[in-house]
Image (cartoon, rainbow, N blue to C red; front, side, top):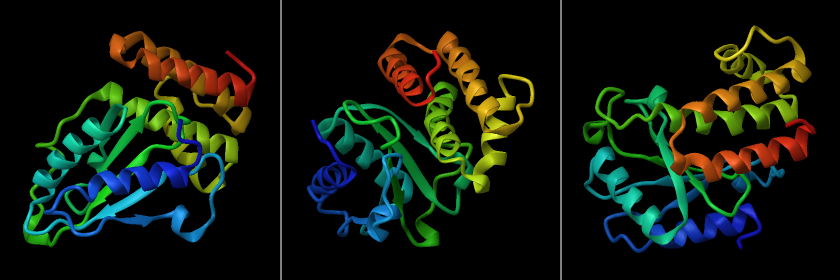
Length: 201
């Protein structure tokens, strides 16, 4: 089992370098700056050679699923078309350690739009849920509005971090009720993480 974010990042970078049409992938975000806590995710950038963002992501998805135990992935549709970012969630690592991979291409190679990329509402909500829990555990004032908006989709408007964390329990129950069976292992890990960090179930 991989035990640190840096080890996860190294394994992903190694798998991406097997693709000859990719320029050297590189680390981004907190792992570069050294400001890493237990909740930090893994940011990786990739500059393909003469490939569109859509074609690159398709190849990245193939590589990630063939080289790693990926539970699911999700496009960051809100960032399109300016930035092509896909999040991957891996088995056997903390739910907070998602791999966010950004494909960096010139403007004329940007073909991905909000309308033409795959969208699974359950995958999207299961991507947002650990991020919201992370912000609530850090009590990040900068992201409080984001957590409030997410929780308010499932429960009355909560006030303060304690109520928001309770609201995340309601949110996970709602997501679980609509999710397919293939999401069950990840949802189970979300519940375990919630219980260990918040003390509720």
